[in-house]
Amino acid sequence: MKLAINLILSLGMLALCAYLVWPNATTREQLEAVIDGIRFAEFAPYLAAYIGLLVVVQLCRSLRWNNLLAPLGVRVPTGPLLAISAVGFMAILALPARLGEFVRPGLLRKRGDLSASAALGTVAVERIVDGLLVSLFVFGALFSLRGPTAPGWMMPTAYAALGVFSAALVFLAFAIRNPERTVAFCLKLSLLPRFAPGVARVIGTKLVDMMRGFVAIKDPRNLTIFVIWSVVYWGANGLGVFVLARAFHLDLSLVGAFATMGVCAVGIMLPNSPGLVGQFQYFTLLGVGLYLGFDPRSSSDKLLPIYAQAFAFANLHYLLQVSWYVLCGALGLATKHVSFHDLWTARKVDEQKLAPPPTRGDDPAGAVDPT
Image 1 (cartoon, rainbow, N blue to C red):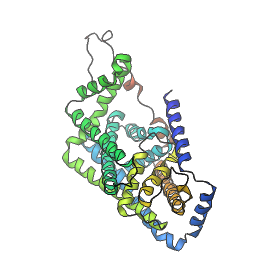
Image 2 (cartoon, helix red, strand yellow; image 1 turned 180 degrees about the vertical axis):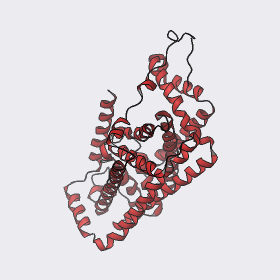
Image 3 (cartoon, helix red, strand yellow; image 1 turned 30 degrees about the vertical axis):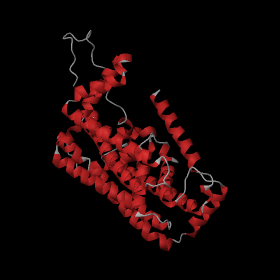
Image 4 (cartoon, rainbow, N blue to C red; image 1 turned 90 degrees about the vertical axis):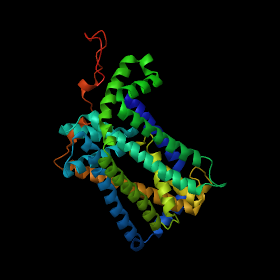
């Protein structure tokens, strides 16, 4: 049932984004003319710079995880860390509804370094910090663009993204101080204990275990280093958008490039379509359109020559990203640190840890240790 729901959400997102993005026949002809008109002699320097920035992104995104694992007494050697991270990032891209987020913690558990739940807690911290940084990028870029001609959805979206990840940061702060009470309070708000107490107990136990990974927030040194890695990582991402836009002769400013990167990053945090097809392109075009004066949802705007250039840029940006993460993931699988068997079993959670804790009728002491 969970897989069916994830697939439905994923395919629904694919259909919606493909409908919103795909141009008409006239624009396809314009797109072909734009691609044919790019001479490789002009394009090569931008492509080389873009790939160099992808290397920086990959290294920062991978190596920073050790600074979240260190407070838990775990430090993964560079080779295995790069391999596990590369395979995990490829899985995030390939699997629907962001199920790939569970692969990295699962692969770490296979090494015996840490429980999957605690490792997943570090990934949760990673996602919240990433979301907050991206939201700040988006908020700053869109705030600079505000005005009477700005679309109505722009600033509400910026405020909403910032609010969601700020709330998540508050949750982290309370979870560090008292994880059991924080989880119990959140579950009570969800009404799940009333309608499905057994499920609520399982979720509560898993969440408390996952919060072991939140301990990184208590370590100022490692958290500071992690944030620095993250700023460099997202900075290289934004510069990559800026550099590639130059190859397509798009007059996208540096601020516009970071806004585009941020809008796309927030958009793909939603349940993702298979391989992010359509979804990546749509949110990229949405960000570019804010600065270049077109709306990817408008049929008439899709006739504009600038849309053809932006559409070509969005698709090449997508293809380069996909090719890069698939290549890195394949190299990770080719190492001795990760195998196809590890990748397959990493998605499974230890059955003993998933089993619901005993109820009062089963527990002779009449109480259950929430940890």
